[in-house]
Image 1: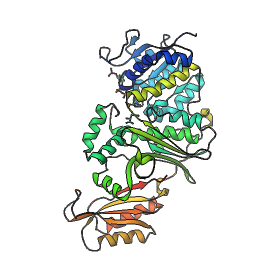
Image 2 (image 1 turned 60 degrees about the vertical axis):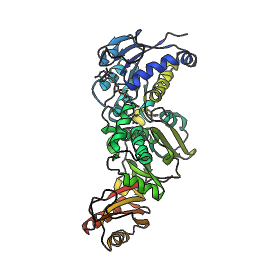
Image 3 (image 1 turned 90 degrees about the vertical axis):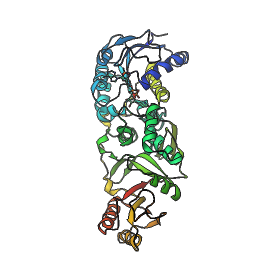
Image 4 (image 1 turned 90 degrees about the horizontal axis):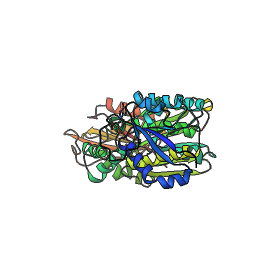
Length: 435
Ligand code: NDP
Ligand code: HSE
């Protein structure tokens, strides 16, 4: 048997400690599967005295991630610190430059520096592996990069943030407050160190940018993602969605259009009958529309130590076997620059919630603004008692569902409705995503 594969592991938090535990628990099976013993030989984190509930007695402690990344005592470097820049970036650069394969779960790092790091890996003939960076334990990176190599992909979309899906599910099912659900997600180890990355949609955008590159063979471009978080979602939206046959999900969607590649992250209405609408809690789901396989959905745990460790360990096992895939599926020189499709040209149905003054003719005037722009309405409902659901006194929520229209046209109709003076609050609109 060859010499053991020596891992240098930086970051011993939720994911890092779970990786140590999983490697220990599965040691015999991994040795059998990879024909090589895998050992954590050196580690780094901030606090050398913290009890992490794992046995690190045989691992050498490094006070500096970069020194660990360069150390001749390790064969591969595993980065589980987090953050787009700082020690995570410096250490991964140092490891790749020193000819060591890297494994990371850090989608923020990849979204910002993925192309450059992939080039560095290529130049040094080593692997840069990041299965855990998207959808936690769901093997979506490998599926896109290897499993669907014989397909041309039209759309990839899904629930890519466990924290947000957990919050929306508990708000909808149990009527709990947003803040209470977020606190619980943090306690369970799902949220990012700064949870605005989750609820602001940025974490989903980072993951979507990675999927877009893999699915369409383009350079990763997180700046081109249109991002909206879940902060503006009210219980009123979840209830209205339920009554109208939809569920609100924070979706990341990337699709080819005649105008370029559209990448968007936003709370989105999914028909209740769709597979994606059934996905509750921390679970993630990714659907791929492709020419040969048609539709493929992968569902599984999207966050948490054990599930994420499963993906990190899979990457380590590949490296132990000698696998050195191109990080984004193609040589970096063949990844085309991404041509972004403007969101104004987005064509689709919309849910619109308006807080209208409860006056005769208000709903009819609003409907007229849509009609004059040829926006067909699937339904228009003035919901419940005036002033209910938290609107100011003397107002009533009006909920509309439109058939497919361009986003620019919808925005114009809403601006006209605001100018008419029938609305007490800024309109809320949510795109509808159909299977
Ligand atoms: P944690 O905050 O739980 O752990 C971070 C670890 O990094 C801690 O051990 C911390 O040290 C260490 N660290 C922080 N700053 C430094 C530094 N300057 N130098 C050295 N070590 C440092 O994060 P997670 O484990 O949750 O996340 C790690 C990575 O995995 C992130 O990129 C995250 O986005 C990603 N990820 C997380 C998932 C999850 O469900 N939690 C799922 C998928 C990906 P110390 O313990 O001493 O403070
Ligand atoms: N904070 C992330 C989430 C972790 O909630 O999905 C997994 O990437």
